[in-house]
Each structure stands twice: as C-alpha cells, then as structure tokens.
Length: 95
Image (cartoon, rainbow, N blue to C red; front, side, top):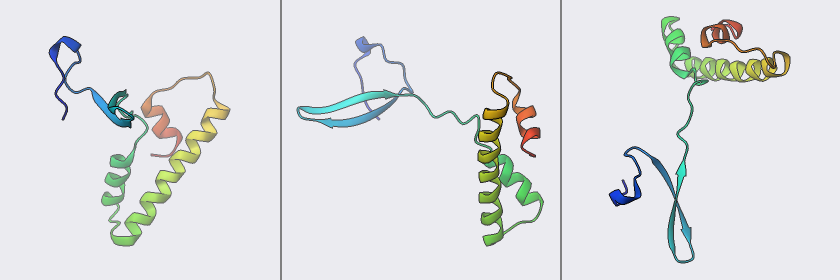
C-alpha cells in the first residue's frame, strides 16, 4: 500500500507499478486486468459437476482453456465487425 498526499487527487484503489530509476522509485499507473474473457470459474464449475478430479481435472481444465483461446482467435478473424454478448460467445465456444 502506498500513501499519497491528498493534493495529488489520486482515488483509493488505483493500481501502481513501482520502477527503480536512477534517483529513486517511480510509480506508474497500471490499468486493472480485464477478466471479461477469463472463464476459469465457469470451466471449473463444469468440471466439478462432471466429477473430474486430480490430474484429469487439471488436464481437462487446461484443454478447455486452450480451446477457448483458440476459438476466440478464430472468431476474431472470421467475425470481425460483428459484436455479440458474453452468452453468445460462451455458446460459440461450447461452454
């Protein structure tokens, strides 16, 4: 946690990345990670419901995560310009 004087008007919760520079430390603003396309929780819910466990769970989780990545990359090249909802995206990739 970093304490910043109030006159800098930096709201609470802003993410900073420290960098060492010649005369001290520089803090750069960092955009928070966008987890819109992170389907990890949904994948795990499905796998748990399907009674996966142990190494089989890990293998299937990684396979499905890669499948999402691959399908998304393919969709970008084939469907450029057409927008769709998260639910439509999930249906498109088989979730």
